[in-house]
Length: 211
Image (cartoon, rainbow, N blue to C red; front, side, top):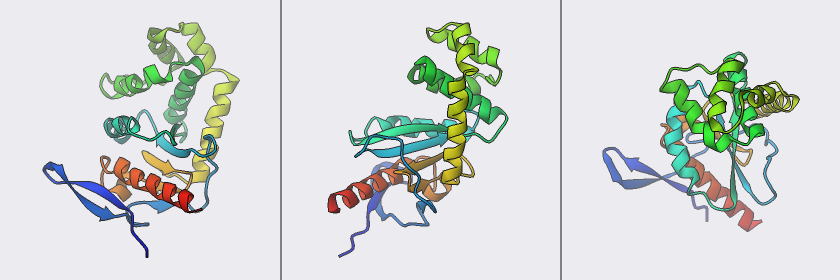
């Protein structure tokens, strides 16, 4: 017998209560037209968070996904995918991958969002990003080299190709296992996105256990 997957939606004004709702394709999530190859180890379930540092909705989503990521099982891997729509988007994507090259992503990721949305800093110019990163144990020169490196440019290009393969038209978005797309619109709110993604992760676990 078919058993619909359920996800919890907090009751309005009643955060301690939740109601279970069936997970419906086309209503709560979309199936990508073509499955995109994942970038995680075999057996892992990939959760891709597509974002842009300058996006206020992406910033507001952080309070929900950051806590959620801490609850994910050992069989789930999170991948951050910066948007590459040109202009400031690409500059911020380069900043993200430069931090990755420098080994400071975990330390700067939330602070980069805060600097833009709380301190009104654009962080689009190389000198500004290098100065920002110099507070995280790297020199400004090391940051400049990373920002202009071939490795970072290649990663930005790869991110653009991946976003096109997912046919993402905007951010924020969560893509589960290269197959299922969750957006604020499909989820109904930013806070619902992790809950629906959780149900999709469970769906994938069940599919794998049955195969």
